[in-house]
Amino acid sequence: MKLIVDANIVFSAILNPKSKIADILVNSKSKYEFIAPEFLRFEIRSHYSKIAKISKYSFQEIGEVEFQVCREINFISEEQINSKIWEYAYSISKKIDEKDTVYTAFARYFKCKIWTGDKKLVNGLKKQGLTNFITSNELIQN
Image (cartoon, rainbow, N blue to C red; front, side, top):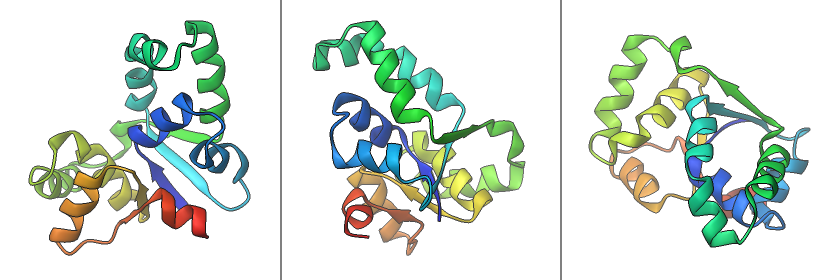
């Protein structure tokens, strides 16, 4: 099963590399194909200071954990997605959080679900009658 991995999943796994979320990312290659937008790599690195403050990890340790957590994620350029999909994704996401447009676009383009822990995103998608998401609890139960 293909899944779009959003930022809160990756940050959660980096902050707690022994969590179920991290375990799924690191050890589920045979069960899931993880996809994320390329910008997520830059977002992670732009938050190293915050991650270090919360986790008490050095930047080197964060880099090592990031490598382990992200090694099974296929990072794909946002440029591959055509403008019609971006327009659709924006029309959905602007009612929730415009920052989630990229995840909605990827889910539409790859015809799969967004793996998210973002309750605002989940509730916003539900309100619009969409089911293109899966939560960590649902994955853990599988």
